Length: 164
Image 1: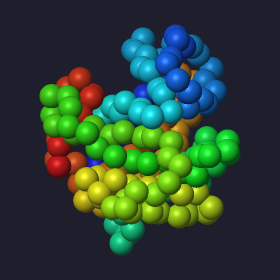
Image 2: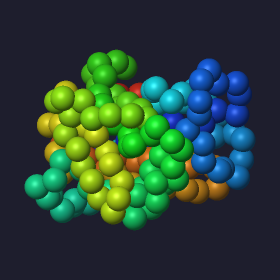
Image 3: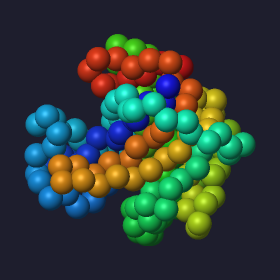
């Protein structure tokens, strides 16, 4: 089944370094949870969504128009050429996503260019993202990037990690 992975929203509290910023109508976030976002690393959460079939493509990652617009807005500052998606081993179920600003493409990174937006995928994350759709969703309580990934086998109860 597909799983909805959402990157944590910006914290209303102090954050070290530069923040990825986007508007939200409320300083509190779902469940009262907040997380720190810096220019170098963003924590990710995992939530199951209703089962639906995603259309698999040959591309590792495809972006929705709202994700393209948000990434353009986030990378409009000088020295930010795109964002890099990766996976890290953490949480009680194995893996979680990271999202970073990047200035250059790494030697083993795969580059996805769509509608003028550059997303770099770390080598370790390339197989886990195969066929994934990246979206940006805003509602009354939050604004977040969501990864709709058909490859997920399970998620943990706390929403911090997933396995493939």
